[in-house]
Length: 149
Image (cartoon, rainbow, N blue to C red; front, side, top):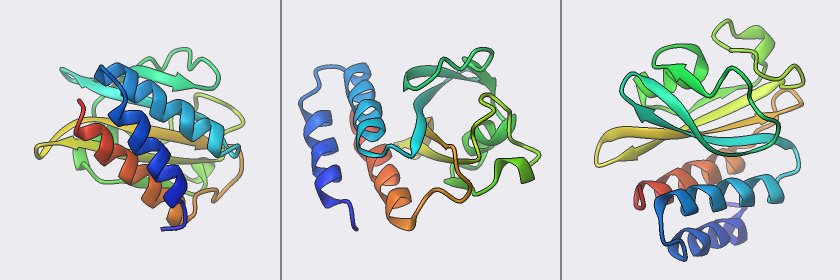
């Protein structure tokens, strides 16, 4: 993977965290800092039949602090437990428009002991913004978080 240094930073941040919430916040901050094309990075956790917004970096997602499972791209990932890469959100009817500048989205599930716990969502302001290496890094970050949630 291209981003070994960033992965090692994430590993250190997660391992140094006392609480799960701290680990989540540190991962979000690191991803936003290291990848300027990511204009929004956040974590949603499953609570009942909803995804509830946890730590995030970027604009406040008014009206999207809670997303029903199965609704939108984030809600779809909660059902399928598979990474979703949307190269052009304007071409995907599932996309819930939170920010007008978002053009592509990446959502990676956080799986704990075979069960969906939550997800990392990343928005970018240009179409087709996510490389294979960036996707692999976010998936690795989700695995690191799964060990702490």
